[in-house]
Image (tube, one colour):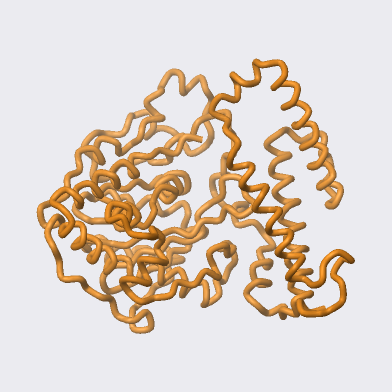
Length: 407
């Protein structure tokens, strides 16, 4: 049945489009409601008997709903799982149910099975199962920095960190060595001051067309070395990440994009996950500007997945905010500065799939390909605005870099 069929859909809706609009509206209401929930004073609130009773009742209802979901998928030993394991099971159940819904809607809309939307469902094996170090979703023990050596250091790493392996540690060790929780590059970020040359106007350099630009897909140690040889001698780089968190707890980074003035690199962070700490040689080098857009989450993902930190960052989101642009999105910057209409099709794409379709690769490359030119334009506008505006963006970018992954 097509979405324009006059036959009633599920006896309640005129067509598939009406059904999807109704469901999406309800989902949005749920998201808005959940976003209004505040847990800052949760423990204090739970000391009030009336609140505790209502929360316990609500918790029971939620658990019943979860159990109803579980009944749709065979899941053995449910009652033997602890809370974290039940969460993982629930994520798997949601994955399966959403895939069934997506497939049914595609069938109803007449979408062929060779489309990108069905390609997403070809992730049969979770890539995280192949990670050398298992993702730790525990909320009981704080996140321990993965870094084990510290290039471009002003202060050394604590000895205890260099001696640790990557496995979870207990709270007793944390009590004896609380310094392991400190931000490894806090001092270096704090000490950074942009060179005078970074505070002067520049002639914006518009990049070559994507089709004319060398782009290397980095999925081996040899290619990683080739990329490192190139980016280590640059004065500025554009960086972005594609992260998988759709129906996942903490998620993980699936792709990293790095662009210089002349070349683009797409890094398979699933394959090279345990090799990418080498990027600290560049990313913590205060002589190389790293240009991000809206880096708040990127900073945490880099720490969590790879033990990577950033010294000397220019966040174009912070620049757009300083300039009071009407919209702060990268899509807006691409449009006004480059006349590029950014595709929204892949914003919720599943970046775990391999091989990545060409459409995905093009979208990912586009995110950083033009970013250094946008940086040039924003930098000049900030200088025109006032003598302090550019410095303000660097200071705000430093604060973002000092964010720390805790849980």
